[in-house]
Length: 225
Image (cartoon, rainbow, N blue to C red; front, side):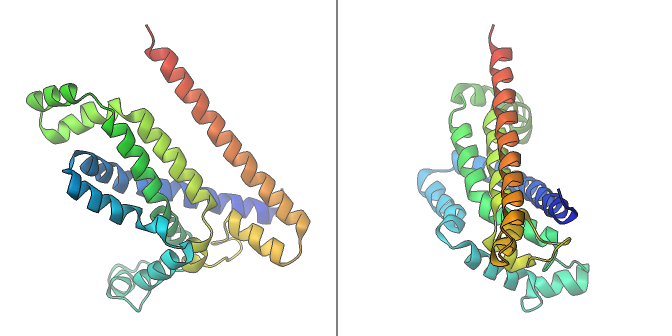
C-alpha cells in the first residue's frame, strides 16, 4: 500500500476506535436507562437517541460544526478556555462519527439489556447498591450484546463520510479517512487508488466480522457444560 493509503487507514482506525469508545461510554448507561425507564419516557428518550438516523449525515455534521466551532458558546469555551481545537481534526471527526453511530449502539445494547433475567437483577439489588449491581451483574451478563454494539458502532464509524467531512474536512495525512479518500480518488478519476482503498476497507470489515464471529463462538462453547 502507498503511504497515502496507510495514512487514510491509520486515521480511519483512530476515528473508529475513539468514536466507539465515546459510544460505549455514553451509550451503555443511556441504553440501560432506556431499558429500565417507564414506557412513555423510554419512547421519548429513544426517539431523541434515534434522531441522527433520520437526518442526513451532512446535516448532523453541519450542526456539530456549529457546536464545536467559534460561532457557538460551546465552541468558544473549548477554544478559548480549554484550548481544545476539534474542527478540522481527527478527534472532531471521531465525535461526528460517534454521534452518527450512537443510535445503532444504543438499540443493540437495549436489546441485550431487555433479555436479562429480571429475578436475577432483583436479587442483585438486594445484595449490593444499584451501581455495583450494574458493574458486577448487568455488564457481565450483557457483555455479548455490548460487544456486538461496539462492533456495529466501530463499523459505522469506520464507514462514516458525510458528518466527518463536514466537521473535519478531508486533509490528507491529518483528517482524511478511507471513505473520504475513496471519494477524492473517484472525483479525481484515479480508479486504481479508489479500488485499492475500497479493497482495504473491505478487508478491514471482513476481519472485524470474522473476529467477532470466532469470539462469540468460543464464548458460547465455553458456557456449555
